[in-house]
Image (tube, rainbow, N blue to C red; front, side):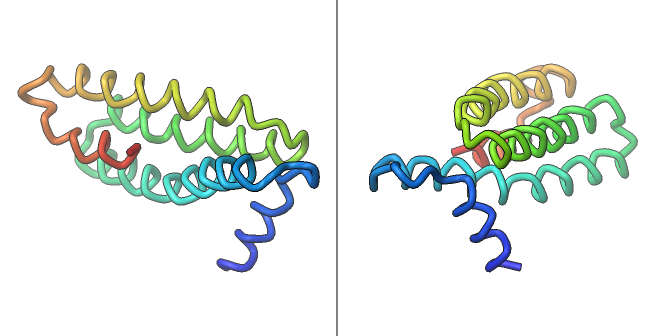
Length: 117
């Protein structure tokens, strides 16, 4: 499994990329790959708690990120992945906290926000 993921990450690189650029791209792709299952589990947990509207947010992260990874594999263009990760890092935790009742009631979202670091 890990070897398959490594081949996927290597296939998204351009041969002319230098060391620092490769490391940056490598970090974006691996971060996205490992966060997808975590967000899927979080979404399932929220569904089990019957928080259907709140479960849409991590599930939308999964769908958007998978779409961006497919786009990256086809085009080797990292801009869409970078912007989607930036927007999701800023928008999704704040939206989820707002849906859960504000700052005090949604305080458990610190874990969700910390995963983005």
